[in-house]
Image (tube, rainbow, N blue to C red; front, side, top):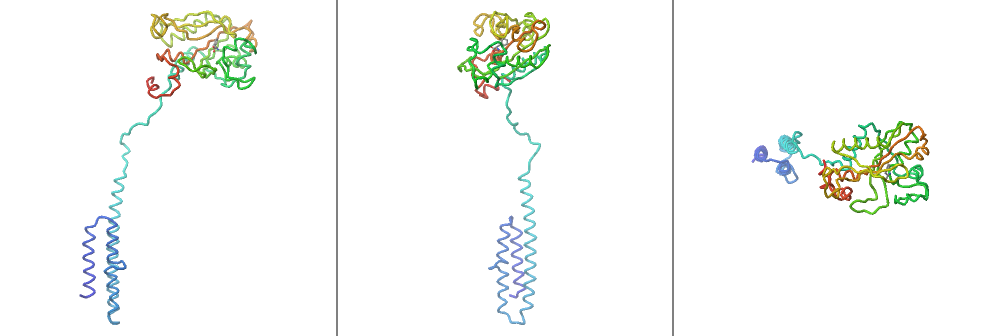
Length: 342
Ligand code: PHE
């Protein structure tokens, strides 16, 4: 068989192989089989050694031409296979941007946040500004200016966390009252939400960290009737027109007179139930007329101005609002609990 026929045979069998192959790996194997060290065309090249010097140039030309042709065939097929593979990969990796997906899980507002927002929006609706103060507080604001001098027995009732002799974790939001009276001129109408701290037990109704919402109003001719009217308006707005408040005498060093306030039981609307122990009333806050001594210490003339203050326990209001029986549930962060209050 002549060189020409040999090349033609190699070409034909390669062509057959190429037409039936489906990936680049097979193609490279085919390339080796023809052009590799032990390839058929390489063998043909080697066989030239047995030709006479006169025959060699023509044979060399034939083989080189054949080699180029075969290389071109392989390259063309390789390009085609690569294009097909690329096409398939693009199709495989395609993203349907219109496909609906599961939404990421988002958190929900804490029930205390929900209750706080209700109280604050009711109070701002009544004309109160929202003011905040520091959680780490000077003894001076937390106690002294609120008529609780050092060694006053009422300090013991507060189970204070002391940072040092003069600095405490605030035991109530009342220091914000003192700070505001010192920094603003009457009329003052503020609501002060915030975290407070007491060295308390942890049980179903006590926690060393909890929240209060302080209210303070200072103006000319403010009296106890205004205090009662404001609280009535607040709770009617929050829980309905049938809500009433009831004042019981109490004591706070910074208010005089002072009162504990009961609210119509939110759960039974006053009929008497387990939550209100059959009385129809629930205690919700402490309040009173700002003690003239406090006004004076905070730079407000008690012969011209008077005022009232109240302190609402946020957790208590939240528990009443949602019928939650154990305070600890509010701090555990259990999603199954929290997701109920959306
Ligand atoms: N600061 C009081 C407390 O924490 C509550 C209170 C506030 C009472 C304002 C009267 C007036 O117990």
